[in-house]
Image 1 (cartoon, rainbow, N blue to C red):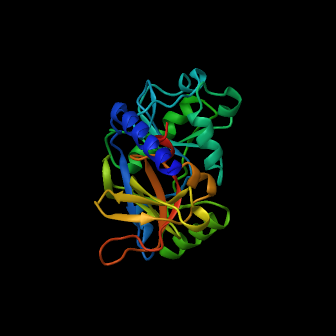
Image 2: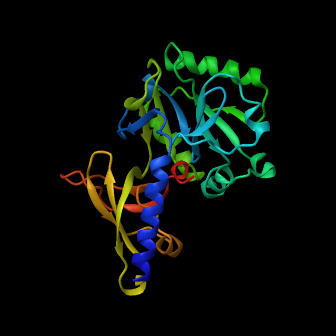
Length: 281
C-alpha cells in the first residue's frame, strides 16, 4: 500500500510539473547506423556521454526547453549566436555531470570542470562541412577555454570506422556519430545523422508502474513504457535499488539499452540505463 501511495504521489506531482514545462526545442536527432556503413560521405565524431544543451545567443537550454542553471560567467562568455552541443565532463562521468548542471544555485567550482562541446550551428546556411568550418572560426575567436569544437574526422573505409569505434569503446566512450557532410541544417529524426554503438539505446516515456515481487516487495517491479512510435512494453531490469525505491516519474523519459527489435517492434533484451537528465530538471 505504501508503494502505491508513493507512486500515485509521484505521478500526480510529475504531471503537474510537465503541464507547466516549456515545449521541447526542435533539434536534429540521430538514426541508427548499419555496422556495414561506408563512412566516406560523412564527418565522424565520438558520441559524447553528456547533456545536450542549446544556446540561442542569450539563454542556454536543455533539450526539454528548460533553462540550464549555469553561472553567469559561463553564459556571458559564449558567442552571441546560436550553438548546439553537449555539456560534458569526461568519459564515464555522466552522473557527476548531471548533478552539476541541474543544481541551483550553480556551484562555480563544479562548473569550472564543465566543457561545452559544440557540434552544430543551428539554422546556418550551407552544408555540414561549411557549418563545421564556420564553427571552428567562431570558437577560436571566442577564446573561452570551456568552449570546444567536437572533433570531426574524415574516414574512407568501414575498417577505419570499426577500428576507431573499438578504440573509443575500449577507452570508455559510447560510440560514434556520422553526420552527412553535404547535409543542410535540419531538425527532427533524420538519416543525415547516424549513431554507431556496440549496444543500441533509445528513449521512451514512463506511462505506468508494476509493483515488485519477492525481494522487490515494497519497491518498483517494472516500468510501463511507450516509445515515440507508440510501442508499449514493460522494463524490469537494469535498476539499482535506489531506482526501485524512487522510480522515474510518470511522464518522464528514460533511456534504455536493447539488442534489436521483435517483429512487432518491441525492444529485445531491454535494460534500464538512466532517466534523461534534461527532462528531470
